[in-house]
Length: 259
Image 1 (cartoon, rainbow, N blue to C red):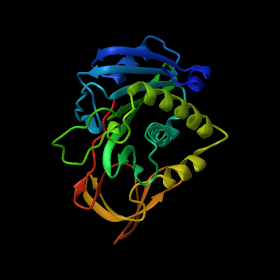
Image 2 (image 1 turned 60 degrees about the vertical axis):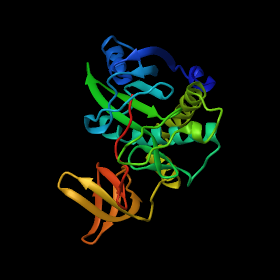
Image 3 (image 1 turned 30 degrees about the vertical axis):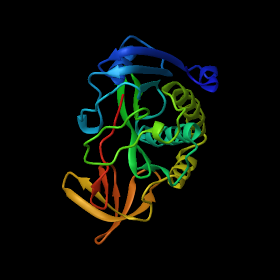
Image 4 (image 1 turned 180 degrees about the horizontal axis):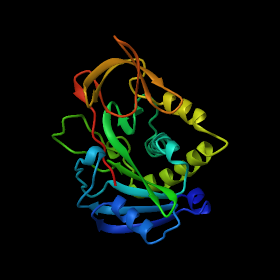
């Protein structure tokens, strides 16, 4: 069930037993004319995806959700919704586990970490249809279990709080999203969201490595610029990065579970 604040704000919920992916279900709802503010949650997925089209396993007991937003913003501002959603996810995880930063941290651009281990991630996809720009936010959270044998450490919420359930997390997440989205929407702007995200950031001020199309680039993580690009201090000078996989030391922490 969605949180009370989310329901009062007009958000709706559809729950499925199993789907190919909740993001595909959200796109189908959009094609059928859904007005948005729609959460779609599945107990299982057989074709879950992460960033760059990566497959993501979907064992039972974890949260697989997508949020459909119809005309939430101008296309140029859509990447900022990833930071809004990341903050909402951090808020929700903190509410159900009692953890806080730095144990609970956000990894640029869209992962939630517990003790440096990947616990969840986000995937944003935008689509223009009939003159309107729409966004689907896919969210996958390791609630009851985490994958094994991955090239990066993984964690799940139940290991940190014995009473965590998908239902409790969804209620907290939907309310947190409504609050964070409302604060970001005009006249709020990205400034307060950026500041709140940096307060919860992982590896801020530390040396990281970004895997980019032209090859790895290392430097000190300085922060975010006014549009959300990562600021990296390299030997060649300051560099702004739009997208890439982030590594800390020699341990990769890339890959994003999504709905």
